[in-house]
Every structure is written in structure tokens, then in C-alpha cells.
Length: 474
Image (cartoon, rainbow, N blue to C red; front, side, top):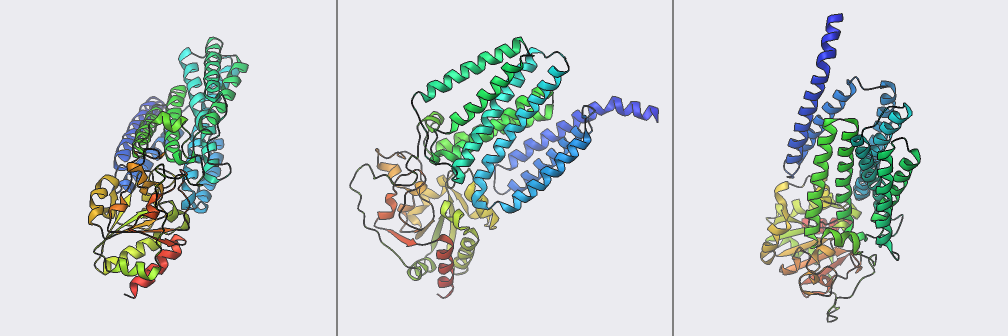
């Protein structure tokens, strides 16, 4: 028995590192598979298996001090997680993602702070590398936490989605960063400086708030993606603090993939990251901004469900363009029912997905996947745009800014140059919307007044239900 114990003691560290290596491989493979809707679920499962393996390996590590506390945290976290998964509606998923990003950053800060306190309180030495890693983890983790809380509040409607700006705001940020750097240097010189450690914590928390409040609601998809990247960077920095290889690798993967996604979001909006962070795009909260040319014909053409159903039922091809209005109405299931009904009548149905439609990256893909829409019917913006000219009907459900033709020609429009879904090139365009309000960016949509555009006013779910019933009777 003694020999077995000694053998396990010798081989356990190597076994843990091997488990970490396998877990890291699962993360990489899972992340690769999540790059396509077809293999995304499989990638999610592989990533989850890798995380389970990493957690189990960590739990058998001899550095674990209290399994009872871990058990309590596991039970509480599991209960809260299950409750959130069941209680949060799909329309609230963007703010949920923002909240989880923030909690990830907070977790990194707490681990780094705990390691610092445990070492200092026991009078143990802290190397310069360890203190720098702790400071970096605290900076990124706290910025992620408070920044994500502000993003959550904006998306939830707790605070206005409009940018909050004041005089010398950027100068204040620079001063705070300089003070934080000085405080961090003092802690590196004297790791036992508790006042300095508390100071860099407070400053980094404040920086997170100041980082997000000047960003307009129209840029929230980019902000969520960036905060997700920061949560990964914070986790990677914490991995260096506790010398955990799998945490370093997973944090680097999340950080890198988040930055790539952020760049994709910026490209989809024809924006640079600095302009997203500092320009205050989307200030009107949907009040509406006139087109720059001032020559927009304000004639609106309405259509009733019966006429729209006939147009759809006798079309050869229909492209459905989902937007946030579909998410708010929880209409994805009836949209799928409408598509199935049209297909049974020989109509070709596809879905056009804009990268920044909704309130978070991939928002429309998630909703349509929930309704079991076939992945083969989902078309990216670059693939579907050349096909709109041969499309009989483009059915826009709650989308707004991502279909605004002003982005192509109106140089005075704030969204000029943003790639859009060119639904106005279809033979007919039907827009389902509650009213004529502007999009989340606050820019009025000239699509509503186009000669080939017809407005079907009402809740997306109610309107689609009526269309389904009418199409079935054709």
C-alpha cells in the first residue's frame, strides 16, 4: 500500500499535465468545429469534455486545499446555472453573455487576489514575475467585470443605451492608467504594500466603467465580443499567477478568438475598433435621424396579410431576413413554420444572416438553430447579396440598420459604408415591423419608403402566424 501511494505521488503531477494537454487539444478542436454552424454542436460537446477533464485533473491536484468549499461552490453554481438557463429568454441572451463575460473577469481577479493575499499574509516571497502577472490579471479582469456590467445594464434597459460622455473623459482615462501603472510598480517593488494593491484594484474597476459608458448602443455586438476576448486574456494572465498550463492555453484561445470575432464585427459595420470605442455611435436611442440628402420620398406602402400571403405563396424564391424584432417577438418557430409551408408549395426559401443583426454576434443563428432551421438554408451576407436581384420576395422580419440602403450612397449618414443585406434589390420587399421607428443606431431607414417596399405592421409573431394561416388556404 505504501509503495502504491509513493508511485501515485510520483506519477500524479505528470498525469495531471497529460490531462491538461488532452483538455487543451479538445479546446482547440472544439473551437475549430464551432466555426461552422454544421459542426458547432459537436464542437461545443468536445470543448465541454475538455473542460470536464481539466476540472477533474485540477481536483485531484495535491495543491487543492479544501474539497468541502469546492463542493459548496459547485452545488451553488450548478443550481444558479440551471435556473438561469431555464429562466432567461432568448431575447435576453445578449445581456446574459455580457453578464457571464463579467463574471469570468471577476473570477480571474479573485483568483489572482487570493493568491496575492495567501502569499503576503503568510510572509512568503513573491517574485517580480508573479506580481506583474497578478497586476495584469487584476487590470484586465476588473475592466472586464465592470465594463460587462455596464454593457449588461445598457442592453437590459437599466441605463440608457446612448453614450455617456463628459469633458476631458479620455484625458481622465489616461491619467488613471498612469496612476495604475505607478501603483503597480510600487507593488512590484514592495509586494507587501496592501494600500497600493487595493488602489490598483479600485482604479481598474473604475476604468472598466469609463471604458464602456461612452460607447453607443449600436456598437454593443462589438463591445460584447471585445469583453469576451478580455475575459480570456484575464484568465490567461491568472494562469501565470497560479502556474496552471490549461488555464493559460484556454485563456489565450478565448482571447485570440474574441479579438478575431471583434475584427469581423468591425468589418461588418465598416468601422475601426477605435471608432467603435470612442465615436459614440447610436446616440439617439431609436429616435430617428433624417437621411443626409434630405430628398427622401416619405410615401409608405402598406400591405395586409392576405396580399402578402399571396405574394409569398406564388413566388418562386423567398429570402427571409431576420432581425432583433424577430427575437423580441420570439417568432423564430413560426418563421420556420412559414418556411416549411412555403416549401411544400414549391417555393425556394433561404435565410439571409447579417453578422451584426441583433444584439450579439451570432444572435440570429442561435435563434434559428433553436427552431431547427436547416443550416443549408442559412446564407452569409456576401453569398446572398448577389442573389437578391433574382429573388421574388425579400421578407424582412424586424431587421433595420442592416438593410438600410443609405449605407450605400448617403455620405452624410452615420452608417455610410457599412455592408448591408441588399434587400431593396429584390423584386419585392416586405418589412414586418411594429412601426416606423429607427434602428438601434438611431438612423432612419430609407428602405421603408422605397417604391418596391411594402410594410406589414404588427408584432412579428402575430403577423407571421396570420401569414401561415393565409398561405395554407391558397
